[in-house]
Length: 179
Image (tube, rainbow, N blue to C red; front, side, top):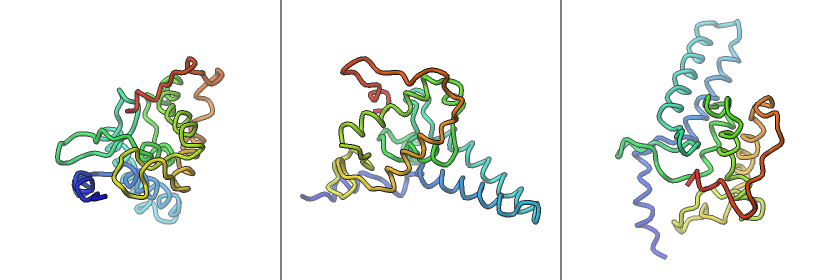
C-alpha cells in the first residue's frame, strides 16, 4: 500500500494536539506542587501557566455539541473533526468542562464510546479509526492508551451521579454523538 497520500493529509505541523497540551497542563500542576512553600514565585508561575493552558484547552478543543475534545487545526482555524483516543487525555489529566461536571447525562455521553469500542474491539481502544496503513490504525491498540482511557473514566468525580449507570436501548449506541 502507498500510504504516503494518507500521511500528507494528517497536517501534523498545523495541529495543536489535545493530548500534548493536557499533559503540559498536568506537568505545570505537578511542578507547582513540587515547589510548595519553598518558592512561591515559581509555584505561582506554574499555577498560572496551568490555569491559562486549561482555559485554552477548554476554549479551543472542547466541542460542547459532540461532548468531546479534539485537536485544533491551525490551517482551518477549527477543531479537527477526527475523533481519537486523545479525547480522553484531558480527563486523565484532570481537565473537566463544567458541562460534564454538572450533568451526568453529558458525562455518560462523553464516555459512551468506551463501551461501544471496547465491545467492538475485544477490550482494546484503538488510537484512531483512520485507515492510514500505520500501526495505530483500528483495530490495533497500544496499552498506554487503554490505561489512559480507563483512568480518565476513573477520574470522573464520584459525586457526579447518584443514579445507576444508564443503559442505552437495546441495539443502540450513543457513540454517534462523538463521530
